[in-house]
Image (cartoon, rainbow, N blue to C red):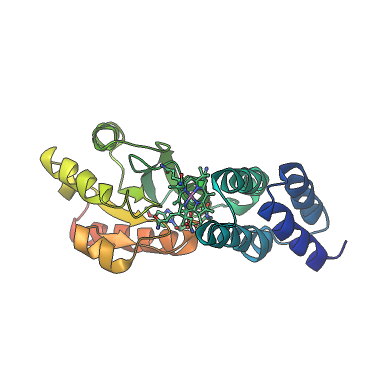
Length: 223
Ligand code: B1M
């Protein structure tokens, strides 16, 4: 198969949730020297976007979304070590989780992979993370950044609930708060009082680095 045929087939098979074929095609693409990011951004992600569009139109239902998501997640596991390849030293500690009430994790996991690739130590709390769990993990791990992912308009308000919980625990000034996820915007991030927002995984890495640099410039290292 040519590279373009692999991309097309990856797109088509992710769309119908054919996980074994998506896995085989991903491996085949890598064997013939294809760029992992190309497979991600030109086939897998666009296919899931189409899944979402079909769900909105009522052509797909939750089971179709689920199997497409699983097919994508399988490919991501194969691509993970390649996307995360790095020689960078640790640039900071990033605590990440999908907010309470939300089970979407593919986007979050992709952000984690890119952060690791850029030299971050990532602690992933998984999905459906309650405010008190974020608070306890911040106390335990003392991260530079805490990241809240939300993928539903109904779970985005958890950003504010989480930030309120940090404030109540006296942690808000000690950690940078970043938010993201498909329905989130810069305006929403500003409105809830987050320090940073990013639309995708690469932007998240860039923004996290900027925020850490700004914070370190403001707070001189202890002598
Ligand atoms: Co659901 N789902 N889903 N879903 N799902 C969406 C999100 C939806 C947009 C589909 C649609 O209608 N078009 C819609 C939300 C609408 C809304 O509220 N605005 C939706 C819905 C409605 C639902 C249910 C309510 C359906 C139902 O039950 N009736 C239900 C909710 C369950 C729950 O959470 N309580 C549900 C369930 C599911 C599945 C379980 C079946 C499955 C999830 C599987 C999984 O994640 N393990 C699923 C899937 C697969 C999707 C779509 C099709 C794909 C999501 C995805 O993985 N995208 C999605 C449609 C879509 O997004 N177009 C949809 C690929 C991923 C790489 O992109 O997630 O955007 P994304 O992540 C990006 C950025 O957002 C950003 O970087 C990532 C990488 O570039 N980012 C950050 C993410 N986190 C970040 C954090 C940061 C910074 C950037 O800083 C901290």
